[in-house]
Image 1 (cartoon, rainbow, N blue to C red):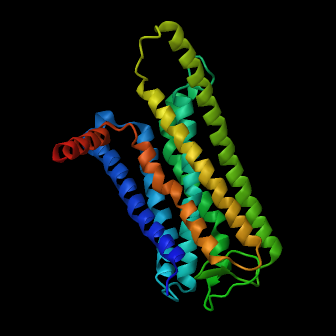
Image 2: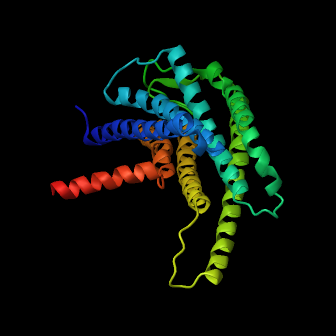
Length: 311
């Protein structure tokens, strides 16, 4: 008989899949429509948005679908090949998520930098660096996680004891040497630190620029006037919100993952909760990015008017 807590977790899994796929699909369609029908409005940063939505969809699907199947009590859902493919794809797309978010924050920081700053000379080169950056991100992350293909096997008896990575369907091969595992974790930690530091630098830089801009605006405008923030300032607010959201869920996910990695007896309910936490960012991300989108705002206002009319 299904426990109430398991039913709640199952509800969260299904809700995250539906909401995440819907939000990322809407954002993807909006950006693709701009590229196809309104090419005069497209910006290089839209390419980063499109890449981030695709990465989010893959992360949600390859993380949550096995969790949903386990919630319904499906046994032996993944064999060795399925485990390797699922975990490899999930970890690669999760790595791409941190890389793309860092690229997005750095791109926005350079975009709003003043003309006289040392970063201004990079503005003209930004659009040519996007696609090579994507290629580097994919190659690096795929090479990093080849380790998973070598060490992950299917969990056939559903009782995993000992340190190491494990899910209900998959686990780390117990014959793996300990120093290989430590070296792998060290490389992943270095990669994550590099991109988190890049996010932190770009975020602090943008906050500093916004603070200076606000002080100048207070001197120019009277207190009674409330100047509308420029699209660049609005975009900067969105990117800062996105980075803050990413950092919060990223560190929460990593803390629980490391705790479970070194814990001798596995807590499957905590692992499922960790699955929900790790999928929060790709689920929330498109809604943060669509916050000030005019088309979405018109749709929301139209729905609100219809509600008021029917009421």
